[in-house]
Amino acid sequence: MDKKLFVELFRFDHKSDYLPYYKKYEVSYTDNETILDLLNKINDIENFSFKGVEDFGVRVNNLFLNTKELISQVVDKTTKRFKIEPVSQYRAINDLTIDNKDFFEKLNIFSQYLSDEQKETYSKELQLEYYASNSLNFNKAYLGDHAFIIASDIIEQDESLEKEILSLINTQDGILLHTSVAKRMFKANAQNQAKINSMLQKVTKTEQENASSEVTQVDTIAQEFTDFNIAVYDQNDTEQLKNIVLNSKAKYVDIETKNDDLALYSQNIDETFSFKIAGRILLDAKDNNADFIVVNSKESFTFFDEKQKLIEKVVGRDINIPVVTVSQFNDMLSGEKDTSKLGFNTHKVNIPFL
Image 1 (cartoon, rainbow, N blue to C red):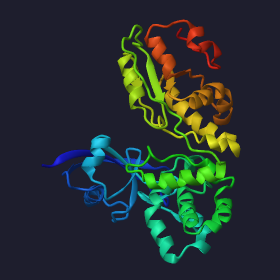
Image 2: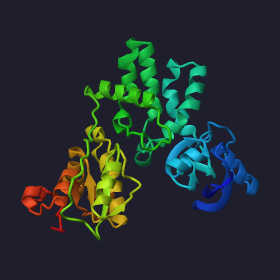
Image 3: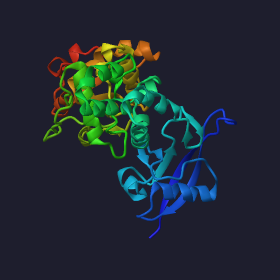
Image 4: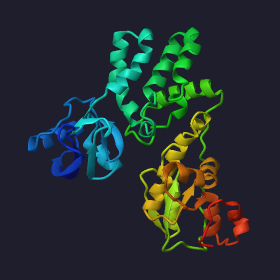
């Protein structure tokens, strides 16, 4: 049975348009049709630029995916309202078609180690992963996730090249600027992420750890947060935090940046890089009228609260949004109001509602 889909399609022609715009379409689909089928249907209504192949990458509802994916699965994960965009608006030439020469320029640093066949394979398999990286939004010279995956493969094939290869990826624009794509891709490749983590471990000589902890919910809520707007942040999973906020009777503020990786390792070479990412997250919460933001790791709390003034200087805007850990929020839900017992007296950003 046909179902209805509401689509906003990114349109832009670099020869004639100063800014991009979106056109709206209502399209029928069936459960076995793909994103490529959808693009072809829209193209029948009105011509636009895209590549009609299954490994063509696009961004749908902020998720990076190939057009071979089923429409129904994307609907299940997001909504029946699709916003379809190119994998890089910055590099858009014509609608969904981009100039991808930056990918190949960075691929070519490994030319002496790869055959033409290997380069062709990597170009087909890793472009989506490359453009999905949030790091490119903050540093256009970022070497790219594909480089670290390729580096891992080369070292695996010939361990004698390790020092040489690591010197290529451990640069000012290299692996220390890596941010996870796990929450940015429709189907993230866990094996590729493991390869990148392996390279990070070799460069930093430390184990990659999960900064988040298990979230617990209070059994009885003694103090509700009716009339509050609350955002949450957790690089790995915000669902449990979202449920705690909803149970508190507050309005949950769903910010786009709620899973963005802060790239804390980048502080070793460029402190402002993480400040820019943190600023985007905090301003996302502020601009969506959040009263405060709840976080699930000590590292993100320390960064958002203690360094908020420095973050403001980097992004050029006042932020002044309180940051609360999930344990503090749970204590408030249990009825605690003593700011000292809650630990709010040590916060750099004032907590105004107690």
